[in-house]
Each structure stands twice: as structure tokens, then as C-alpha cells.
Length: 324
Length: 241
Image (cartoon, rainbow over all chains, first blue to last red; front, side, top):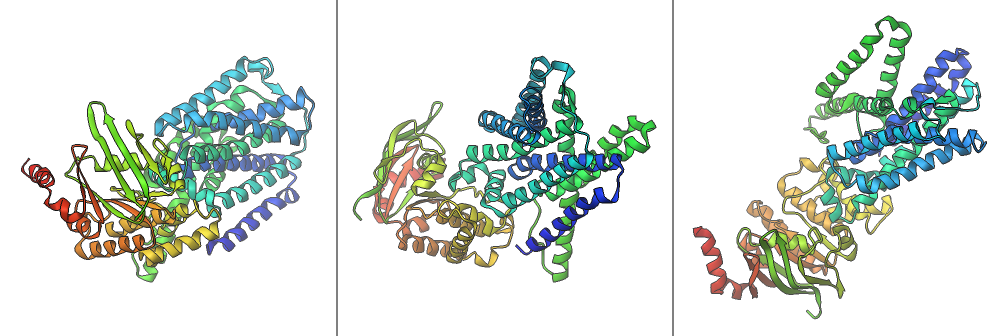
């Protein structure tokens, strides 16, 4: 509980630093990068709710992002709604899909759940490809609103608020402990009165709603969406890689992972574009190396090291061991 | 010693062709400690899993405090007031001892602060309070079995099902656990205990139910059951096999 004050301080400082970015630079390229970095942080931490805290690997996270993006696009172009209510409804629909998809799929374990969610993602991509209302493979154009500062702050406030809410929900409130209990031992959790299906579906919804809203913000920001850009494998895969690289089940890990991997990717594409083919190769090698050498991710490794040092200083054996 | 808190009537559990539990009936009265014994594979743990909702009974009915509870899922039984421990302990390994018991306390105390207070009270009672900030997987076997009991107690159950909480402990640890079980009983909790170690069962049980090949072969006071020829045969027969 001691870390609470320090955590809030770090959060306020980082958030404050982000807030002054648009005052320091008028460079739209840089603002765009910062906005997208925030977006990936949001997707990585929402994915972590289910994967890190509950232990279920969702390979269809991109579907929620896409559902939010398409809902926003449809409401804004066909029903002429304003942006904020559209994005909000996009999040709610993503949550509703999680509710409906969660009941059957969250009864599955391990790889079966991963495959089921992957199929869910594919199904929604197909749906967007064949439906008229989504524009099929041509995608959809949204009303243009070219204001990078607006989108930067929208994304910053949403992802920052999301981080705080998730932190409170998962690290301070009973909900987080219930999720961890299910991750550690589902049968044991049942014996102490937890209904695993219910708790897991709630986690799925908590993970899906913000992903949908982020999709909505993305759609309005980029102004053009299509099935590949919002419902393709890449959305899920990047979020997964970022969260795993940073360290699951901590919120902080996925945040760091998203920032680092996104920075690496951008740097590569902007300055080393002649070596583009190498990007996925290097990324793949880095991921493989991190899985082998840092199984708890960057943040997990850092925390273990700190704890080890503290314990050595006190001359005691390690108290809080990380799971193998 | 009046009304039955748990009534088991003609309960069977069949796995394929195997009748793991076969037409078993017995009652447990409020405030009693009932021992469930039998040779290896007699169906004790299966019966436990049926009573605690992990298996639905194939036949028969279970009544708890006057309510038919056959087929209720475990989390619902926990709410009804049945707590259980597992023979193969199931701590939430990555969490601390305190967190383990806090999660169990949410059932009765949904707020974090209240749940923490309750968990500390329980850990004080079970003697784990000094280890509350340690990781659950760092505990010794005795500690983990105590943690199992702590989690079950945090539900504030009226019936506690203990599955081999003494087996595997050294004599000192075993005595401490027995002391704890008696302390729990003195608080008014009814207990059904499965145990391999006869010394434990004979010392603490008010009554003993003996299973063999899924069937109840004897029931009564520990002293009487120990002299029962059918029971002796069941145990010696197993020893020869």
C-alpha cells in the first residue's frame, strides 16, 4: 500500500509532461506519433486486463477496436451524430459484443480460448467486408476534422483516465483480486464463492469497452477506416506484443512496452525506411529474446531485481517470489 | 445435538461404469465433528466433491439446513454456508497470504477495508498472521494447509468440509492443526473431515462414517467403529492387496 503515493506522483508527472507537449512543438508529425503512442498504450493495457490479470489470452482484441471504429463511423456519417456520443456508443457496442461472446468462449481454457477469440476477430473483419453499411472493402470516410491538438488531448485524457480507472479497479478494488484468484486457480476460486464465468465476462467487458472507444477516436482522427486497418490481425498482434514485452498483469509493463515498441517502429519507418523489410525481423527477434530471457517482461524483470536487491540489503531471503 | 444440518440420502456418483459413491446416506447434526474414513479409493474425496458442488450427484439428494442443494455449483454453496478445503491444496500462489484470505472474505465483506480486517482476524485465529505478507507459494505444507482452512473460515461457514488437512504434517504440526479444528468447532461450526490418519479421526470425531468401494459400511462412535469386523476387514484387506 506504500507504493500508492509514489505511483500517483509518477502518474501526475508523466501525464503533466504529456500535457505540455503541444505547447512545446507545433510539429504535427511529432504530435501524431505521440497520439498514436497513447493509443497503443490504451490498447495494450486493456488487453492486459484479460491476459495479465485473468490469465486468458484474447487474440480478438482488435475486433473491439474495429467495432468501436465502425460504430463511430456509421453513427457520424449515416445518423449525423456528434463525435463524443458516437465514440461512447461504439464502446458500449464493443462491451455488448464482449458480453455475448464471453459467455460461451470464456468457458474454454488456454489455446481454445485464444483460437475462439481469434475466430471472433476474423468473423467481424469478414462482416465489415461484406456488409453494405460498412462500405465493404472500400471502408468508410468520416467527416474530416483536422486538428491534431484536439486529437492529442482527447487521446491523452481518455487513455490517462483509463489508466487511473483500471489501476484503481485492478490494484486497489476487490475486482482485481478476484481476477487474480481466477488466474491462479479457478477451482479454488469457486470454493470461496466466486463465480468464474461471471467474473471473467466482467473482465472481458472492462477490456472491450475502452478498446471500442479508442477505436472510435482513431476513426475520427484518421478520417478513413477499412477492414484491414481496424479489424486486421495487426491491431491485436501489436497490442499483444507490446503487453507481453512490457510485462503482463501490471498495467505499467504494457504501458512501457507500448511506448518502447511504438517508438522503435516509428523510428525505423521514419529514418531507416530503406531497411523496412528488416523491421518485422528485428521485432520478431526482440520478442523471441524477451520471451526467453525476460519471461515476466521488462517491467517484471525490473521489479524482481529491485525486490532482490532490497531483500539482499536486509539480509533476508526473497519474500515475494515471481511466479515461474 | 438436535436437527440435521446436512442430510445425504442415497447419493451415488457414477463415472462411466464405476460407482465411485454408491447409495450413501448419513446425516450430520449441528455442532458435530463427523469423520469420513475408508481405504484408498473408497470414494471419500468423490463424496466430498459431490457435497461441495464440484460434481453433481448421479442419484440421490443432499439437503443443507432444510434446503435441497444437489447440483448447486460450488460458489453458490459457499454463499449458502458450506466451506471446504482441498486435499491437494489450492492456494492463489502468486498472491500473498493476506490477499488469499481477503478474496475469500469478499463473500461476507464486499468492501476492501472490511475484508482486510476480517482476513487479519482469521489469520490471527489460525496462527498465520506473522506470514501475512509472504507469498502463498512460499509457505510450508503445514502453512498451506492452514491457509486452506483460513480461506474456508473467511466464508463464515456453518458447515466446514476438511479434506485431509492433517495428512503429510509432522506430529507437532498435526497437533496444532487438531487444536485449530477443535477451536473452530467450539465456535459453532459443524465439521465433516476426511482423514487418513486414524489417530486424528479417533480423537476428534463425535461420529465416524466408513466408506469402502463407494458404499457406507459402518457408522457410529469412533470406539465402536474401530471394533467393527467389517471395518477391520476393509482395512486389512487393503493392506494385503
